[in-house]
Image (tube, rainbow, N blue to C red):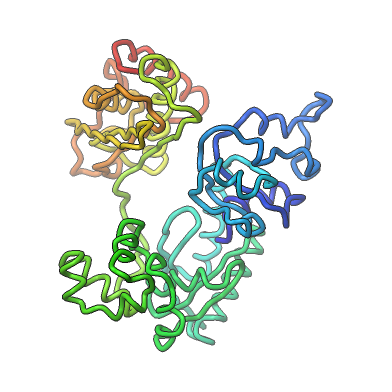
Length: 413
């Protein structure tokens, strides 16, 4: 999907089309005030809010990263995962809006449903990306797949008002790279014979699976492009990166990928984390950390219940003010999707990490997942005093938080 999070917001605020807009950071009071009439008469329709009333990136104070940016903002060098303050230096005039996850999930479901009506073999790759197998779809091979790609684009736009870019290629590896060639709203067809002219000139980081560390190591070895990687002897790559990774690097540099489009897969874990606006201290900011910690546990529990899973291993993630990261896990005797139990197990993990430095990030993770009702799963853990608490929303969720808060005495925070 093209600038998905930002594009969803532009449906709500069409007056911002063509302007530099970034989505990210925490929700602020100014975001709530934006939806209220200046004279206090009540809420106002988002589409009628004057452009000059929107908060600007130059006035943003605090931490956080950019989730996505509109294409006019990207022209200034602003991009996903960039720190908000750095982006403010590059494009201070950009409008900044928070992420509305409920709205994003709604449109994510809608665009995927539109695809499935046309091409039923689809692999979900996150909130804004999928792989689709054209092989057996009627008309899937016409014009190298371009006809079907156009049909999918039109269907998505008709049902959501959003655009997407599609890469069509013999395998997932090349299709992923091709989808970035002609954004926004583009279709790129890559054939096997296009490898040297269209793929090899790209940087090695364009290969899905080569991250920052591997990219840095390759650069240190004088390898910048995919073509330069393809020119290396596979045994040399194996010596530098290990048998599995080295052999894989050589294969993908030559455009080889046999991984299928998998229509169903089980999640490995579910997690929630947050970066603080300021570094927090485990003692002096105990109340605030406790509230955030509890909220993360409740959200993980809600995610588990919504998707029909229970977890046996609960873990935490801390990032200190010096950017060091600490993680701890605890595996329980029984599976659970109960927020209070998750909070209790995560609290035990906290006791095993040093809290002598300020914290800039806190996360909670559930792993060892099985589906609810799986006969191979042990009994599901109950909440405090044996009560079978459910992770839900609204009044029930607030009652759960109060029950958890009653457990927090004696916890580190």
